[in-house]
Amino acid sequence: MSNQLVNLRIDFAFKQLFGTKGNEDILIEFLNAMLGPSLNTPITSLQLDDPHLHKAYEDDKLSILDLVATLDNGTQVNIEIQLRNAHDIIKRSLYYWSKLYTSQMQEGMPYDSLRKTITINLLDFVLFQTYEEFHTTGQLWNIHKNQVLSDDVELHFVEIPKLVKQWKEEKINPWENAFVRWMLLLPAHEDEHLTQTLEEIAMNQDPILQKAINKWENMSHDSSFRRAYEAREKLLLDEQAKLAHAEQKGRQEGLEAGKMQLIQGMYKNGMSVEDIAKFTGLRVAEIQQFLRN
Image (cartoon, rainbow, N blue to C red; front, top):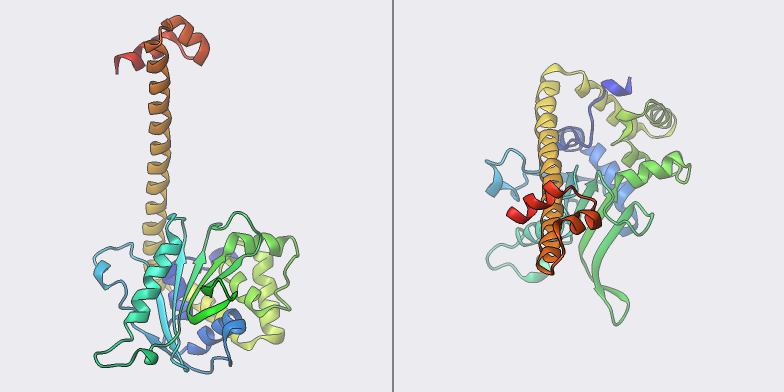
């Protein structure tokens, strides 16, 4: 069954499951599981907002479909899914945090009315190569006192490949950890065993997860949703392929340029074409081509 389910890492599907009015309890459960340590009290209600952040890019079909909510205590939360590493994700997250934070301010309002703002980045790639933890939280820190300077700033990065690896190695247990099971829902369509495990947990101890799985299955089999989802998926995957090709081409061009500089430098220093060929392992004709350029 899992291969018939839509990929929740495609932003369109994620937003359909977690960001639709009337199903706020699914998002509340997800956020309580994820943000538990940084919440004074569990979230009991929230308001789904229209994300204004990307209006400037509304003509760009690839702009991220993010999810924005205001919690019952006024805290604002912005959730994004990133399929590929654009190498600027931390700066991007800070930028969206700042836009959301300042969007609260109306003329004449005192600064102390600004509420905590959280950005959540769900990443389908490894961002932090040097450590194993799949969940990284950033705050504004007082380096002299070694304590939080302001908790208004909070950035979360969840690296899904690390999470899946740790689940397969049995280092994390979705039966015991609500955050783990909600996050494992995102890659579950690729793994029948994982899907079955989450269904068992939902049936035995997590009714809201059960509701989410039911909704996921229903939308996966809804033909009109499926058409829109597949169009979005194709657009995102085509863009990924284009960018991967451009990066590969750029690397190749960089290698060619470096090779040319090396050959031209050796030739200027008096090495014969034949000696350069022996040194580089290239054919004489290739070297002559480089020297003509």
